Structure formats: C-alpha cells, structure tokens
Amino acid sequence: MSLRQKVVIVTGASSGIGVAIAQVLAREGAQLALVGRNLQNLQATQTTLEQQRAGVQTLIVVADVTTQATQIVQQTVAKFGRIDVLVNNAGILGNGALLDLDMQEFDAVLNTNLRAVVLLTKAVLPQLLQTKGAVVNVSSCAGLRPFAGALSYGISKAALDQFTRIVSQELAPQGVRVNSVNPGFVVTNIHQRIGIVDKDYESLLHRAIASHPMGRVGDVLEVAEAVAFLASSKASFTTGALLPIDGGKHNYTPR
Ligand code: NDP
Image 1 (tube, helix red, strand yellow):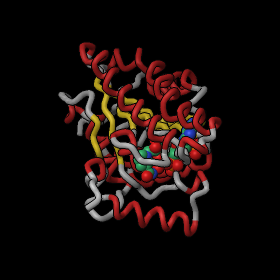
Image 2 (image 1 turned 60 degrees about the horizontal axis):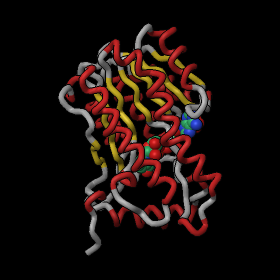
Image 3 (image 1 turned 180 degrees about the vertical axis):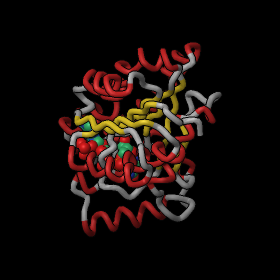
Image 4 (image 1 turned 30 degrees about the horizontal axis):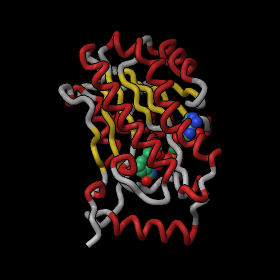
C-alpha cells in the first residue's frame, strides 16, 4: 500500500479501533507513534505489533490529545524525524437527549472528538506540508445522520466531518489529503466506558444489529483497512471524502 517507512501518528492506539489501525498500518510497513493515556494498554499494543512484524518501529506517547498536541508532535519528530500521516482516532461517547443533557459531558465530548482533532492537526501540519502527507479522521455514521439521544456525540462527529471537508479544500493545493472514515457500530470498550454494560449493552447491540442493513455490526479490522487505504498513496486522488464503514447504516430506512 506504499506505507513502507511512512511515519504515522495514531491517537487512541491503546484500545479498540486504534489498536486495529496500528496493526494494519504496521503490516503495511509504517513506523508508528502510538498515542493514548493508558501506558499499560499502549505497551500491550506495542507488544502485539512486535509479535506481528519483527523489526517494526514504534514509539509510545502517553498524552492527552485535548492538551498535549505539541508534546505528541515533538516526541514523534524526535524519534522518527518526520511525520507523513496523522490518524485522529481517539474519541469518546456521550449519552443523552437535549432535555437531560449534561453540559459538562457535552463540553468533554466536543473537546475530545472535535477540538483536540483541530489542535493536533494544526500542530502536525508543518510536518505534513513538508512530506505532502495525509490526515485520516475517525468519525462516525453519527456524523452523517441524526440519532435521537446521541446529541453531543452526533454534533461532535458532524462538525468533525465539516472540518474534514473544509481542511481538505484548504490543503489540496499543497498536496496534503484529508479524509475520514465513518464507522457504524463496532464492538469495542467505547460503550462500557460510559456505563452501558450487561443487559443495557446487550439490548443496544441487538438494536444496532437490526439497524445495519447488512444485518450485523462492524469489526475493528474493517475500519482499520479503510483507514490504511485512505492513508496510503492508493488514495492519492482522494481528499475530502467521508467513507461510511457501516454496512449501509447511513442510508438505513426502517421498513
Ligand atoms: P475505545 O473506547 O475502545 O478507544 C478509545 C481510544 O481513545 C482509547 O485508546 C483512548 O485512550 C483514546 N482516548 C480517548 N480520549 C483520549 C484523550 N483525551 N487523550 C488521548 N487518548 C484518548 O473506542 P473505539 O475504539 O470504539 O473508538 C475509536 C474511535 O472510533 C472514536 O473516535 C469513536 O468515536 C469512533 N467510532 C467508534 C464506533 C464504535 O461503535 N466503537 C462507531 C463509530 C465511530 P486511553 O484509554 O489510553 O485514554
């Protein structure tokens, strides 16, 4: 996929979709800065990558994406000397409709899913302009269509999608591509992190399966393969694209 020796930052590489993205990019020959807050989980990702591909070059960056963009860039450049691709994958869920909306949660979701992406992309941009690199944002099907009860999350991802479109236009003349993947429901820890567990999770999963026209939810690797494609030179004429990886959910109409 022409990712050999490319230096890629993957945020949220300590869990779920981010681990799979790191695995697929490592398979394609990339050198990886693995970003997250949980050192133990980042080390587990690193071990997985080393077992998968001997000689893979990785750097663990323990950082909060909402506040430590500069450190992420500095540590990556200090280790690898350049940055070719930024994968903005770190994200959190929010729960709730307008009437019961917790504004602290709203701020936290917007801060992580939107503001931190703007902050880190801005910080990485001087490097990407030098390498004529690429950005891949991990958005959501919830950015493409409304889901009642997922107000803060849906707003954060819809705004992220507009960020992808606008910045792709700004940077196209300089040869930097900006795209997003928009997954449907994927089994990770993201729901458990906000307390959706046990019977509530089973019920959510059941409803999620029914709302994907392909009759199932997605797998982390299905998202990761799409990220690798958009990061690679195979997508050299693609920018500003929002790629649903959702079994058709973005067009779903109940019968
Ligand atoms: P997980 O909860 O499994 O992983 C989330 C990752 O984000 C973790 O690695 C976590 O790192 C990181 N993260 C969160 N906040 C911060 C922060 N402030 N600073 C640094 N890292 C942070 O979720 P998923 O893998 O499911 O989600 C990955 C992305 O995919 C998200 O953007 C999500 O919105 C999107 N997505 C997920 C879907 C799903 O159904 N799972 C569907 C559609 C989109 P740590 O724990 O180390 O802090």
